[in-house]
Image 1 (cartoon, rainbow, N blue to C red):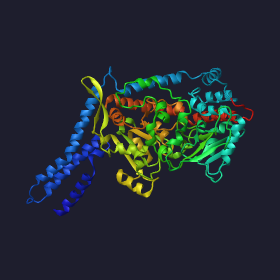
Image 2: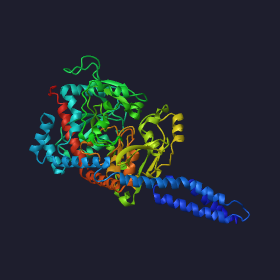
Image 3: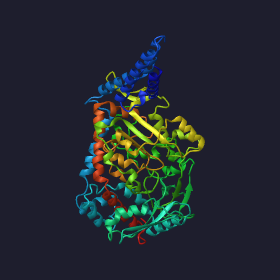
Image 4: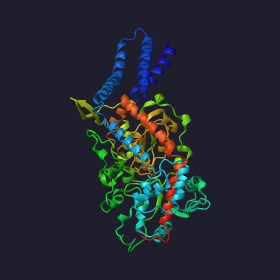
Length: 590
């Protein structure tokens, strides 16, 4: 008999070690409970007849299963409550945000210029000046590539417009000063328009992270149409250029009166909030508060304006919510009017944005062969990654963006969460400690960027799992994307997939003008207070599931239409025209 009971005991141990709460679907969790019941029955049946109190094993089984059954009941109550709390008349805040986003995207498409004359006039209307030399050839190239975006390059123009305050010669001098400084981590690049070839140099590096080859790849079809342009590229993941308004020696009528042309400050592994928010008291607050902020969210902070959500000056609470603002590694600021090209930047900074070369690397390319259809995906939220985003030298790591997200998704603090429920015909925000673990498949797979003590503390605190293949992300309907040290390189593969991206970020990117939140992706606030209600609505209600699938499809289609390599080329072509005009030695300051 012992030879029979041994494998049964081993099987019972394996099943017992797997919690039904951590299974990615209700079916898997239920089958695990049934398997435990069957194997336990076999175990009890094989026990010798003289063994007394066998019923204690069944009581033990009920004690273990009771929390799972209670949780299942609560899930059904939540599903029923959500389904009956909102109607066609009284809609969930997500429904209202999606309706508004649909209108915005329709307007984005319908208002694009259809010919060169209209594009020229629209440029003048938006920016109050004529387009740069070569604009007509740019338009013809964009039209030949069937670009759906012709006019919406506001992020690009806003990043170059501050340089109108200084002359072209002063721009060249500022670039030379930045290039000459040691340890600036800038690549000095030169594009030859006739051959459309780019050469980049660095004072102590040889590998340029594919910068030059990316420009060559995207601009190869534009030989003899491009101007000769020099530009500076940021080598680091983190943004670099801090707005000119933070310099105490800057006058409005002249670039600078005394001191160095460019000022360099390192805040690596040090609190950086104060340095990054210097411009808040000096520059005008350009944040537009849209009418969408008037939408009823019942006290749960759904993101109603991404412009506002990214604005450091409007959110002093961010000072203890993001690793880049607390203890970045590394972080070398450049103060002064220096045009530096960066892949992602903060609201107070003046980096000029361009598409990240990482988006074109094989590691981050979408592979449709590994994606699956919506109905076969797990009905949960997935994320797996590392502890990048800030350096952990003390207990402050608990407040970094990634650590807060994983702690929330793994319910490590057992907090009370905010949900929307109907009581007496009125929608209210309620607090509850209820947490549906099956809706979250979130883990760390690597802990680093920390001192040994705090690496060990994080490994002990989080449920760290082995490395996960990058394509596992396609198995879930909801996929999370979050800042690391800089932008997230996996974002485009999520947009291109059949899953819906939930995006939390503080970084602006080149594509912000062409992506509509709540239509192409779902924005998530830095505080993430809305996340439990948001995920519950998107997974547990028919309306929410339909919305999630529609947003996934919108993002997937738009990615194939507006994020092609041709669209990267169109953007960089226009960027180079603007840079060439800025550094024209004959251009005067305005």
